[in-house]
Length: 350
Image (cartoon, rainbow, N blue to C red):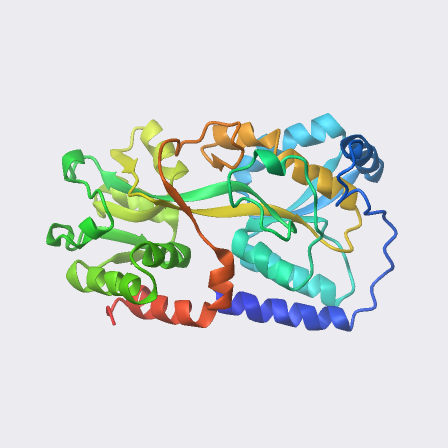
């Protein structure tokens, strides 16, 4: 989501909540931030008693049953899902809060959207025993949300038109004129732009790298990662810079003439889970968060997502990664969005 629009919507939501009477909380939330040895046992009992949760998520439709099914089966807790983009999820939360309804118990969206909800004091602090087994940076210091999976942007090439030996090994290699007219880019990947700019030297030097890239070789900017992946397979885009790692893996398995590689450090962005304040089923939502950080991790890995648990093998094993910082995007939203629109979207390199 555009960070400027996200911040405006969350500000509106905060104001709406100030004037919403809301119902007094009936549920006991003392277990959510508990570190007592018997937390797990008591939390499960309380969650089973609540019986269900309402989850708003942007998880792919095809992956909902594999991810949620085992939770429902093990605990007997029904997960009522409303699936949409993060943008629409934020809109719906705003509308419900304005109406004084606390329908949603848990959200699973991007780290930027979760951090925005945190800043507006809409998420509960959770103390999960599974935090200790997660990769560094998976849980922010405030503990009001936790990463469940990492979306890794990798580079994808058509194996009929690009030789493996010719592939760029560094970001600087992308400035080689041999890539002129051959590079593809997904229009919404602002996070990749921000993080690579930092990798390449920060605000001035890093942004200049992108100006030079656009001026020297140009970018074929497309909307939709699936579309961009398909264009690489068709040979229309010889090399794409920003495609999620699981997409080319799946396409290659189906016989498409493409493969992926990764310029290091690989830029990764977290998707995560948070429990809403005033949730009607807070204990079931907290139990769901625990599940997503533990038993769901190998399931996510089997679906080609990058797990955050150090106990589960990652498709990025052995590669250096750089985790996108959602706080920086929110703190400097206007600056980054303006630069991105001017250099990448409009493609004028200025």
